[in-house]
Length: 200
Image (cartoon, rainbow, N blue to C red; front, side, top):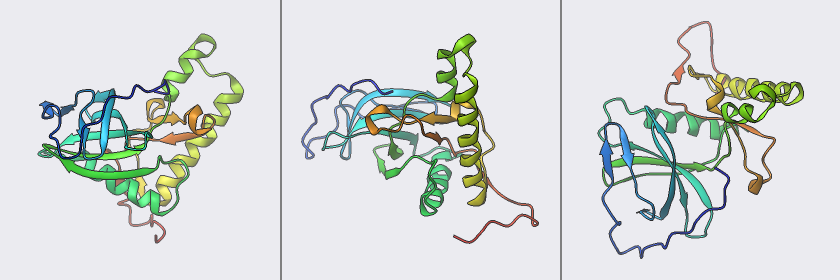
């Protein structure tokens, strides 16, 4: 995710997008070069039951990640994810990627956030026997716990904690040693009356 970006030609704002977004189940398909409001699609980064994530470029040339979900999604996980990210951002959570923008375009809703690098799941494959060595593993574990603690202090349980949902920053941002937690669509509020979240 940190490879040099290609720079597809952007279209004038007054022109329609190249092709309407297509939908396959819960996945929004966007072609390279498509302009979503002010963001130009560079490439798809991944997809799954959560929807699809794309690398996009803004008019200044800065790269971001855009997550898209059908506007008619019966279980709108993106709406919940946006809510959780807004709460975390209001608390200046240091292990959450910056939330940059949100919007609705054609047949889908989207959020734009900071572009990050490899997940812990991917990173450990580069280590000895496909594991992190002791020092990096301890450092990663501490940051993972800090990220989960920030989420708990905001009053949420993540419910999908796994190496694939912890991601390192990018060299371009001088952020390689920092871990971020992602994918808040499965989050739930505390329901135990004995557990109270601090006021925001």
